[in-house]
Image (cartoon, rainbow, N blue to C red; front, side):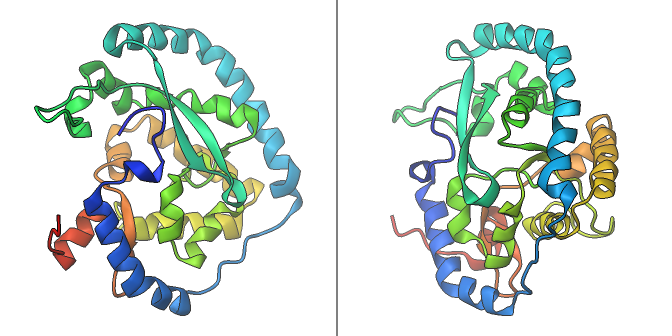
Length: 265
């Protein structure tokens, strides 16, 4: 789903709305009652030093990468045409929305009924290359410079996720979203699900410090240059849809495997 309004709720499919509504009515209140309250850590580093570290690293990185971004922009123009950027509304610190910009990597091909083809069928060859190496996200450094994002922090999510989230997991928005928040959960756990992603974010919010950020910057560097590691951390998730009967955050794909709601369309 790639256009100037990605992240808006009107782009959510009816199937997704059906499962989200079902799980919200069935389990959200129960999950909130059972969850442990998240307590964000407040210290001098989080209030001001972290921002200085962001600027110290992101400004020279943005300048160094600017020629590459210009080349990627030209390639994107010849690949998918104009505009070369698309905007996404994402949730920032304290739940405030901000606009995130990326290079386009999908065409607007439609089926016989005039509907956009699935995203997997619209990603171009050049787009797949950009995604494989996360080159389409280099522009996020601009969001860091503006102050909307940080280098390290929970990944920014679409607006419509918030009403599906438990009060505990909403506390991931107590800090600025980041380029990445590398996993700190046990390696034997199922890393490719929202339960661990959100719990990892909460761990970060409750343990934010200079030491934590340096540790995660090292993890991020290793993740960037390790293709196998990148696949383990970033691949295969469909949209977060709600909480199962045990209070675990799950994706749409996982919900469909468990609940099998009938299509009422």
